Image (cartoon, rainbow, N blue to C red):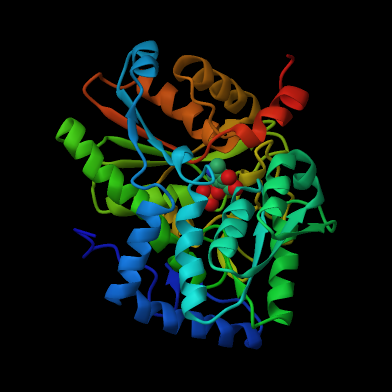
Length: 400
Ligand SMILES: Cc1ncc(COP(=O)(O)O)c(C=O)c1O
């Protein structure tokens, strides 16, 4: 990465400012330290880098297109709207960028089994996919509620030869799936825990970011080729934050490029049913790391909510928490209703059905573009495709 002499986090202790760190039992510290040591070495290894590039290119189908949306640009009448087409990746989302990288790391460590959590099922599919590719056993922990909402992805995971383990505790969504998957990892340290977002104890948020930053590196090259200048805004939805940091990372030191994180406002920012961890959270610890976290006055973690399973998480990655504190991040919320409208709009305008998660970024990005001059550029991260959401949207979220 160029210009990265100013921003260089995490620090040696694994902190992103006051966020991040390792709040885990001693047996896990040992395993995490081993992962860190191997990763730091491999990161500089030419062969590892070549193998990763080969997987990105010939397996995941990278580079993903940067698509100029002529119709949305015309409709909104302001800045040019570009879509970074992560939905065109193998398995249909940005999640594969991280899973090919971490599976390669696990393979180099001699691991024979992958454990993972999933919310929307996209990460579960991406892990089951690389488990098949690398001949590894695979257990995917998934909340019962998400299993019902994301049926197609459950079938895909099973078809790929992995086990889906239903999680019934708590709200039976992503947070609970991470709780149970982390517990399984502690009991089974021979396995590799392939986390799905830029969350968890150090070094996991850094590793996931490093495998996702390809999104922004490509976007920089592509927009320079198409427009001979950098974008004015980058817009991405935020669950744990991996597609957002993946797009933003290469631009953090560009003062003129504004980074917009779109959180799920669920049924409304003023209701109790949202997942606005950056907007409404305060520093707290979840799943072994410190971040901006939804919690009550006593510090109990509050339930999050979003119709988009992949955004339904009460915390958020430590790096995004830190970027917000550093004033480098603009944070907004989009409701379920506006996201569904944006999903239908892109489907009907451009013939592209986006994931409900990505539709949050679209809903804000298009309205932002409308207010900007025509010579400005907005890049919206289309983190995934919407096939997995079609049934839920028609059965539960719109009046046919
Ligand atoms: C398509 C899609 N976009 C976004 C997300 C949110 O994850 P993250 O914030 O890590 O990008 C998910 C999570 O499952 C997803 O499936």
